[in-house]
Amino acid sequence: MSNISAEHIKLLREKTGAGMMDCKKALVENDGDISKATSWLRKKGIAKAEKKSSRVAAQGLVGLKSCDNFSLLLEINSETDFVSKNIDFQNFVDNILDISISKKHTIHSLLEAQYRNNETVAVALQNLVAKIGENIVIRRLVYLDADSKNTLFGSYVHNKINDNIGRMACVVKMFSNDNSNKAVIDLANKIAMHITALKPLALDEKSLDTSFIEKEREIYTSQLKASGKPENIIDKIVDGKVKKYLSEVTLINQNWVLEPSQTLDQVLKEFNSNNNCNLSIIDYKLFILGEGIEVEEKSFSEEVASQVNNTT
Image (cartoon, rainbow, N blue to C red):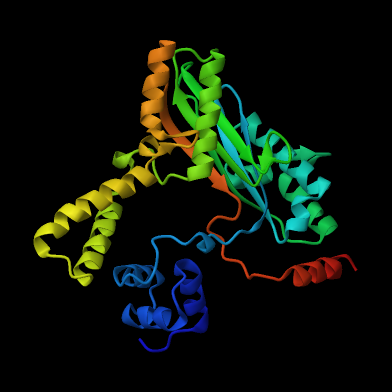
């Protein structure tokens, strides 16, 4: 496949940080498949596993809220960062959180729910779009259920505007035999902060897809063979690399953000021993504003110009 578009090359460059010609060759070799081309570049040692700039940030706000029965995370997107600073937009996000916590919703049922003044959320959203002059989308909504009275939710909002909304938000679901213990609540909130900072891919190794681990093993093997390492030691080196990788991407095995000499698993065991409790992590959800959204990058002057044009 020789007809590779400039847009495909641009996307692969943003994702991997590799050079233009390397990206073009990788796409040609893999029939234009960006995922396969990314792996191909990594095997050649040209690209890193994950380049921070591959996470293109859309604008808007994320939020969280908890009640006795569940916790929720919400993301509402706008076209520019100007809107996230708009008080009408912020109030809208807060109001949608209140509606979403009153009962569990899908995006569809949320849009049909009553907002205020006998109008639905969908109508209120249309009115806000008309007032602000930008496209605004309720992008995603997720819930974590409380399974029993022993369920505890920890939470954290980063770059926050108020206690419930900001640019990143995390809820961690935990089991505890003493939900009223201030130290337990404090640790649960700190674990949510840790997740926001280190962004684990899964709770533990069992939570990761086996094909994902095998893909990493294949990439490490290809890199070592290309570097000329003897065949008889490659498997042992790969085992070590995979173990190290898993310690970086699985929550329970990560180094504790507040004390890097300990893993989170060690922190929990020590805490339980010192406080005579059995605190454990069941699940977590993390929303990063704009994660996974492809947007056209604009200069600051272009963003200002578009905002001015929308208000004239």
